Length: 195
Image (cartoon, rainbow, N blue to C red; front, side, top):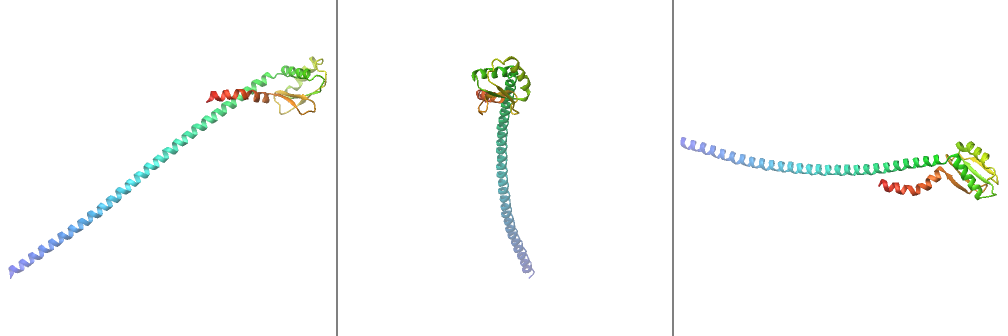
């Protein structure tokens, strides 16, 4: 009986160990399966994050390149505009220098000769009025067969506008008009040079 009991205990032990081994094997298999799922999900998430980061970096790079290109275009346009404006100002200044009272007197006298016998009106900048009146009155009385009215025009810095009195039609020989007229011929050349 003792042998039977020992044999029974041995069988119970052996069955229990076998059952525990099977159970541990199932738990281990389930744990490995679960670990594989978690690992796959983590790898998938890492790949998604990596792909998103690559896309974001590409988007940031493209936006940066576009911003740099736009800034370069803006800089070129502003530089061209500033250079053209500077050259226009220098051009206008040089034309203003050329429009001395002596030159204006010659323009008025030649216009008076061309419109012989018609009363003329000259609009002049305030800075040139006194010098011009003295030049015209002192040296050119004999050329001016008809009256000449000289008025100050605050819109003129250098040069003059001259025409038949009360006609509202003038030859505009102000520094701005002459510069604008001549600038039409010069600006395309300057713009071509800047390009």
